[in-house]
Image (tube, rainbow, N blue to C red; front, side, top):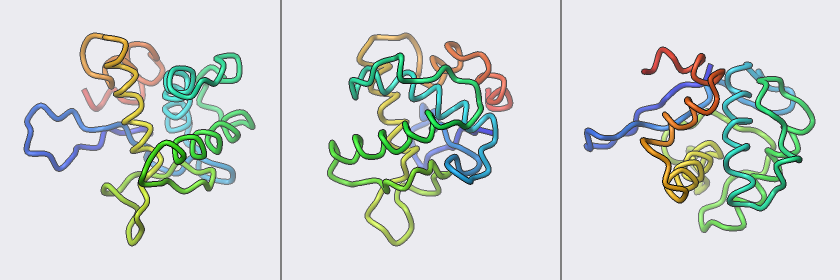
Length: 149
């Protein structure tokens, strides 16, 4: 199940960030809710920030498939090119535990996905926070996050 992970911020307005509960990728656990979260985030991030045609992005179903596998690798490659601190291009979206991968100078893929979702949300002037926006836009995702009101 996807979760909202609280940040270690002293700011009371911190809403946390979206996180997977288990790994998403080829041969991984691929819980339906976690896959749905990754797919929904890709639907918003990839066309607006990385120029990937919407037709190449599957509708969020929660089912891990070849398109999702391909898009994870593509996102990791394209995102790493744009950033100073890189992410692993390993085809997995792992649960973020802390800001960086332990012992590495790399960032969790899901961390950059949240940054990108926040950027798309704020760039297009949507109301509220980006987590509420994604929950509204993807009711199936809201179902999985319902315990994190």
